[in-house]
Length: 465
Image 1: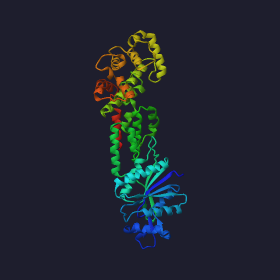
Image 2 (image 1 turned 135 degrees about the vertical axis):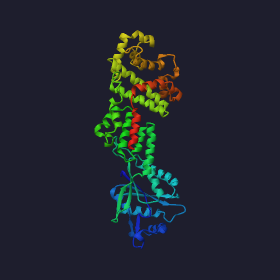
Image 3 (image 1 turned 90 degrees about the vertical axis):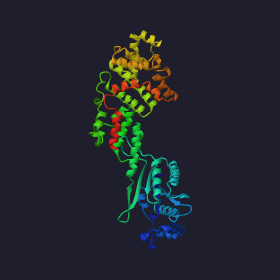
Image 4 (image 1 turned 30 degrees about the vertical axis):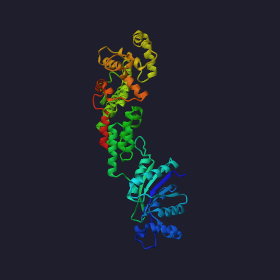
């Protein structure tokens, strides 16, 4: 079965009725329905009928399945295309034997009402999609009322996917074409582009999404706009938001950069870690510091957007990354880059040098390099009262397992909130978040000494819209 499907509204210019004395051989609008009914009921008249505009797209997709949408309103309207659809179906099958054609009538609906047409087209297209789910669709604008054209185009864009590779190359599920008469008497096929208003509306939606750091969804919307630089940056942002650094390195190297951003100060600050992590290298590796920078930025940006549950989840992940990064940078235990191997050596050192202290806190010997065990060990690496010791200790005081009585209620400890989100489906309120606001501000100031990376990304995105 063919994988190409052509969807076309038909109008009064899709057939020519020869030798009737009509201007340009086009049936007058006020008698179009009656004349096409006459032709359909008198098959011998088909020798005087010539197809217009439609054959051009069929020559481009000769193995396609063609769905023609005609109208039959109540009461009947002089320009209804019901019989024209039957005529075209019959003629196309005769002219193109390999073609499958079906004329589908829009019956009883106003052809000038998008409110009526859009639900009808959605139902029709969903039925077609279910019958051939992996087809490539061609919407061919050949005729019909302006409302029919707008409704079919909107439904195609709504129901079908438009995808692209990570670097912005199209791999879409549909194309939009229109057929226009050329000066030689033939038909010129042109791809339909979004209007300026449509592009601006799409950019408005993209801007709203990036303000909430929903870069993956924004990228999907951007695929409908002819702006590969925008698609590229949104792809980078969506991978960075998820801490997918291997994908960032693979897909967004200097060799793949669009020309528009090669000299951008914002882009250079995002891709050269030395521009925004100058004071962190001494206490942890570059990769750990980069992850901390990313995660504390996610924390801040999500709380700014009112997503307090997302902010707490990101901050808990930040705390785990920070502790592991500090241990790896200040000991022989690779708990950040190789958690399993590093955890084994870390537990061995606790057992050899700090076992009694560990048991006094946890009432049992260590069994694995858990987050609390890593915090316990990290505090042994720094002098009490030093900057790093104080930050680690503040994280310790925020965890329920240490059972420290302080400003954090036991059921509002950081790990308790995290577990309630992850396992119990409970959200975090703004007042819950405010318990950690001061600690988050301290970490934010330490790990983002310059511009916030995601605010920089958003400025860069808006600059290329």
